[in-house]
Image 1 (cartoon, helix red, strand yellow):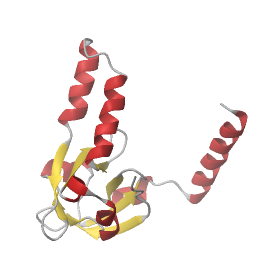
Image 2 (cartoon, helix red, strand yellow):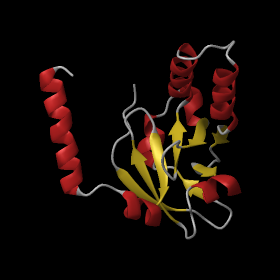
Image 3 (cartoon, rainbow, N blue to C red):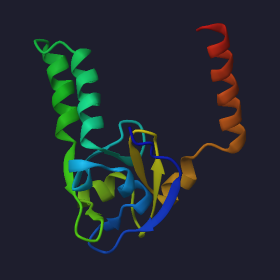
Image 4 (cartoon, one colour):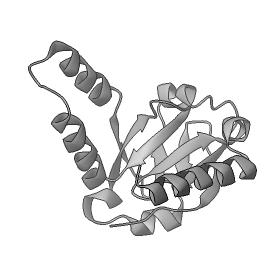
Length: 154
């Protein structure tokens, strides 16, 4: 499985096209080299890019946790799928972000950040990410909390 790590700066052009970092494109295989699934993150003002096989795994987990005969569960599944879309790479390794997706990440300028999330990667407006990112001290504190939970078996 590919591991997307690191942070890469890029620029979106006036049409909303942005180069996916070459380091990330090299990790994609098969059909993933031609297209990805993108959806707005549930909790943050960023877009999440999924290779197709990772998207299928996530959908499988979601569907396994839902009852297809329950109306509320059906609406949750519909909402999750409705906000997703296929993005195809052009010949130069760019993807075209829809106007809705540019608005969803509060992209006012052209500066964006790609940030690896191991099996997928995120796209943020650079300005928005700078507003919400955790400080080094916050990250250190959270890692300590997680380490304690792992040691205690919770």
